Image (tube, rainbow, N blue to C red; front, top):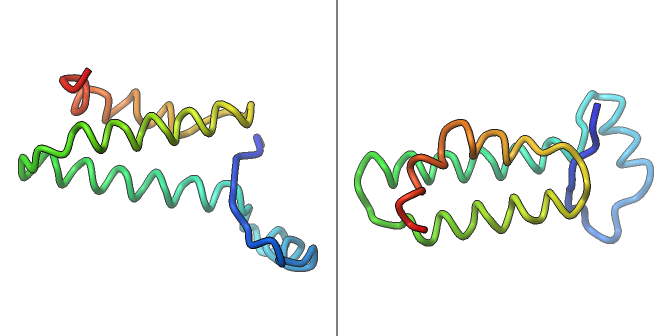
Length: 93
C-alpha cells in the first residue's frame, strides 16, 4: 500500500500514530480522501447549479494534485480528477 501525504499536529505523539494504525486508519489516506471528497462535492455542486466557480475549483484541484506529486507517492487525487472532474473544469484553461 502506497503512503500518501498527510497533516498532523506537531505535538501528536508516536502512540497516536500507533493507535490509528492498529485500528486500520492510515492517517495519510484519511486526510487525502477527505480532501478529495470535499473537492468532489464542491465540484459536483458547482457543476449542477452552474455557480461558475470553475476557476477557483480548478486552482484548488491543481494545487492539491501538485502537492501529492511532490511527495512522490501514488495519487488517488490525480486519478479521481482525471476520471471525473477534469471534464467539468477543462473549459477554464
